[in-house]
Amino acid sequence: MKRIWVVALLIAGVLAASVWSFTANPESATGPASVSAVAEKGSEITLLELLVSNKYASYEKVAMVTNVFISLAGLAYALLLVKQVREADQGTARMQEIAHAVREGANAYLYQQFRVVGLLIVVITVVLFFAAKASGAAPAIAWGRAIVFLVGSTFSATVGFVGMRLATTGNLRVAAAGVKLNPAKLSCKIGGITVFKNGAPRKFDEKKASSIISQAKHTITVDLGVGRAGDFCYGCDLSAEYVRINAEYRT
Image 1 (cartoon, rainbow, N blue to C red):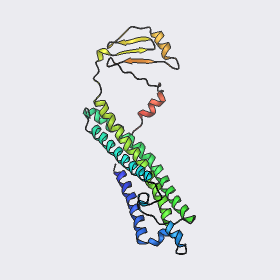
Image 2: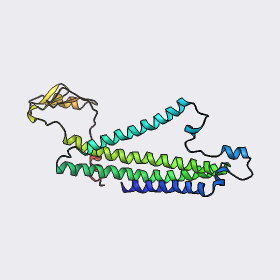
Image 3: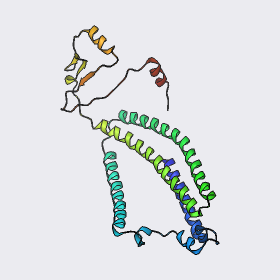
Image 4: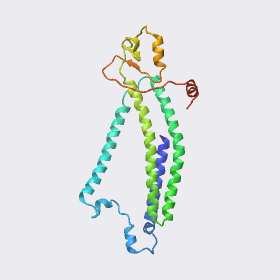
């Protein structure tokens, strides 16, 4: 999270520097002095032009303002959901320890990605700026293109960190709030063969069961004995090499 704040402060610094450069040297925003008065007027940037200009219809202005309020409402609702999740029970100390390990691995994965993507973002930002300058665009346009890309890319990267953080945080709470299972009600089938019922193993034809799980695809059904809902998921056998590699993995 500290790195996210550093990036946010970096963006704020770039924005502040660009605004200061425009206000300290107003003529730079309109290009060279040799440009005609009409061109200079057309290159000026008016704050909230959409709302004050007569070029836009009333419904367009209302739609834009409505979009802003919808965005703010969405953020407020997201914060409400985050608050509800964070206030939920975190389970036992062991569950929290496991969740911390999962979060640590997820962050290590994201940081490794961001080291590569972050460098690419910086390079593209610089290229966009100098490409605009080389094309003869006004400094305001060159800075605008670069800053918009930088801000958008940084927010996209931030979404990854925030999303992963909330996912690991939510998983812990979901596990802590899980339905209490009664082992005496658990049952399991391999294909159509019952191998476990009412919390106890059952006698079954091992050869027939072995032939089922030897197939390329087979179904294992687990009945928790709780509720009426059901779900379906795909899985695969793990090779010995796969297990060995993951056993040596450390964050």
